Amino acid sequence: MSKEDMELTSRGDMKAAKGGLPWYTWDVVLLGALFLFGTFGNSFPLLSYLGGLRNDKNIVFMARVWFFLLTPIACVCLAALIVRIVCLWPLRIVRLRRLIVLQIVASLGTLAYVGLPFLRLGPPEHKMHLWGMRRYVQTQVDVPAIRAWLTSLDPNDWHDVQIDFRRNGEGQLVPRSSDLVLPACILNLKPRSVSLSFVEGCGFGATLRWGDRLLGTWGMAIGPETTGAPPDLSGGPEWDGVRIWHDREFE
Image (tube, rainbow, N blue to C red; front, side):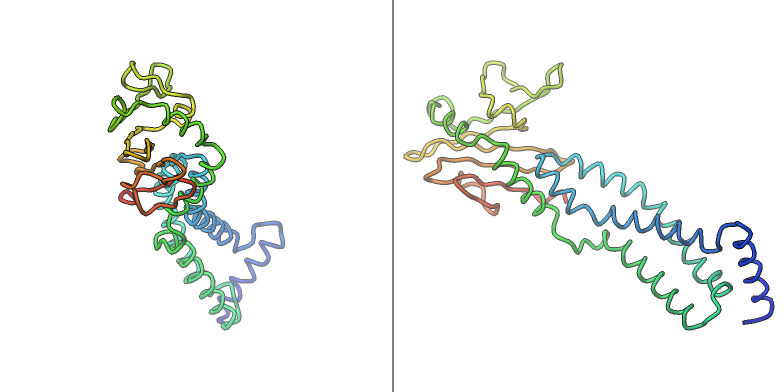
């Protein structure tokens, strides 16, 4: 270490001793900001699970919007941190071995943690959503009431019927056809559409769908408990004649 570097270090130590901020204050700020950004980006599987618990993907959508808005700021913070690690730290840290270790840990550790959200190495978001949604169905969906309503339908009137929903002036979801009267066990779930199908000897099955082209599509199929969910949907978890599914096309 040269005499000039020692003088620079001494000035920094004297400034800290006089009540000024330590020389590494901005490094701590930048590392903290990048840690928060990385934690936010790595939380999407958890947010997907929470979205499944609420049967709502808006929380994930808004989080992703904020993530992409914050990405340029995180890139600037990362660049500033690397410049300080390469240019300033050698002037402040006397021991070479300690300097090299701190530079490697700070730079590679930060790059790895911030880069993980872009690699998507965690649990798939659609599976986390389904795990949360299964809990939602078990606690919030009145499956026996829906089955009782399906049993009361006339196959001649309701076979292959799809019921689409719209929002009225009060923001509530109502069937597009004003002639239809649906039970509360369906309306309370606020589906985008409900498809009904009748299988001879088995009975009615109902498929409820949520989402759109922006959020993706997910749904729930309910059939008679003895025969299971409608057979046209496969790949999702099924129990007690209920199957949930998620369209991964938009992830």
